[in-house]
Image (cartoon, rainbow, N blue to C red; front, side, top):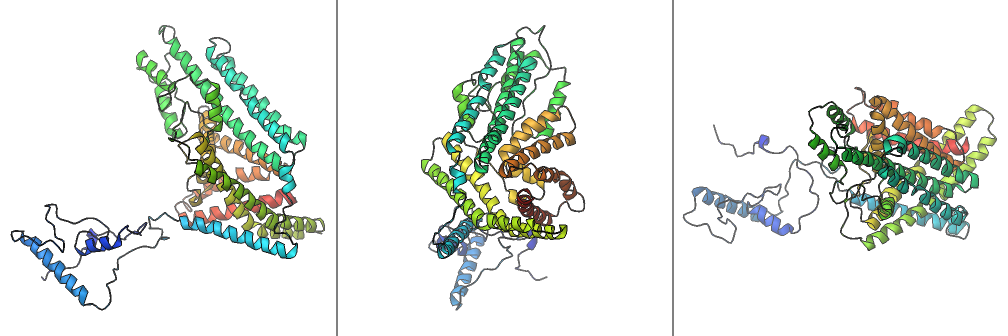
Amino acid sequence: MSESTSIDPRNQPEYLQPRARKPANPQLLRAQFDDGGLKPNGISTLPSSGLSSGRSTPIPPDAPPSVHATSSARRQIRAQQKQRLFPTIEYAARVSHFDPKSDYRDFRGFFVLFWIGLAIMVISTMLRNLKETGYPLSIRQWGLFTENVWELGLSDGAMVASAALSLPLHKLYSNSNRIFRWSRLGMAIQSIFQAVWLAFWVDWPFLRNWTWTAQVFFTLHLLIIFMKMHSYAFYNGHLSETRHRLNDLDNPETASKAAAYKYPRPRTHLRKGFQEETEKEHCNEESVNQLREDLAYELSSPLGHVSYPQNLTLSNYVDYLFCPTLCYELEYPRTPNTQWLELFYKTLAVFGCIFLMTVMSEEFVIPVLDESAIRLQSSRNISEFGLILAEATSKLLFPFMVIFLLVFLVIFEYVLGAFAEITRFADRQFYADWWNSCDWLEFSREWNIPVHHFFRRHVYSASRGHMSRPVATVITFFISALAHELVMGCITKKLRGYGFVAMMLQMPIVMVQRSKWVRGRTLLNNVLFWCSMILGLSMMCALYVLV
């Protein structure tokens, strides 16, 4: 049988992935490849014996025959290449950058193109307005931004300051061994305080009759402070009870020997953690010393620099308020210093995004809503009413898609990034690749990681200890739907329930998407996700404003 010089495909990768970037020195890389020092994928094939086989280094006479044969083959190949009139083009089995099999993920150029497209839109709008009205921009909403500014600032400061009452309350819970202990009246007092606090400040903007812009800002900040206060209160309450149990073990005869309950971390898998805790509760072989070590470990921070109750200080509380997180920990990882230039860029980007959203609303949203509202008043039957509503929804699809992306960027990339720079907060993964989501449950985990951590830690996990997993999931979605409905009510001054119903419908939609007929079809599910997202946003706007 004649020898074959072809390469066995079983020993080669099926596809060559696109290179992420060009080599720093292409000529040097090409020279190394011609000399046999590199494979096409960049792996070195130089002999490990230390013998150089380059063009300028002669092969020693006493070199092995294989080295001489390899050098002779390379010389012949180079001679053949020099005789060709056109340079050789290297072909291989490769995939494109957008191919599903590709591992290439650097598409930052499209991010730049997104901003260039928005700049073109603004310039075109300014030229059209200059031609029609004589002014580059016509911002009718400017009065909404300037009205109630001082009252908003004072009310917002009072709201944040009133939430700080949790700090002296927790010092009371920590120092009390009797009725005000967290496991007795402490939790009840804190819960009543939070309920009264939330009810008062939610009603405050409605009582003052603020503009929707001021009310939305205040309500969003209110919900953030409420979640921060709840996490601070209940985590420190857990630590307070853990410290009391540790002190009680000084007299082991009368102390409780129940297993230590570890508060769930934001990144802990809840189902796994709950099963581990259940197993520990039924473990009767744990010694008192081991229990004492577990309790002491729970009182220390993950980084090992702070322990409870040394964290119950005003400076620690204020630092937590400014950190871009909703889950309280004794301490957080920090960067070495603040990058002031990066902070300036992010602050500038915040105002730039707000300007772009205002222009989009003025040019493409408000005119559609005004025209549709007039037509709906003169509609004569249900079919005409539905047709006008459907037409308005279709005209709002593209504007709301752009506004949605701008809202995402201004909150999760620039506002949270700016506060991360201010506080030197090191963990800046505020979102994941939610744009690749295949269902709404995956989107809820990756679109807003700080809120997802809060709900998983303080709502789902707290419910999971008393009820089944499906019921805990329903409660989590229910509370989230109420919060979204509150925000929509602040924007439109209407409580219609459309947003609440849409949020609750996500659960049966997820069940359908995870059925055996649809599960695993990544592209189809991602297309359905984006279609429902874009259609849902414009439909919610049309329903709340026009109906």
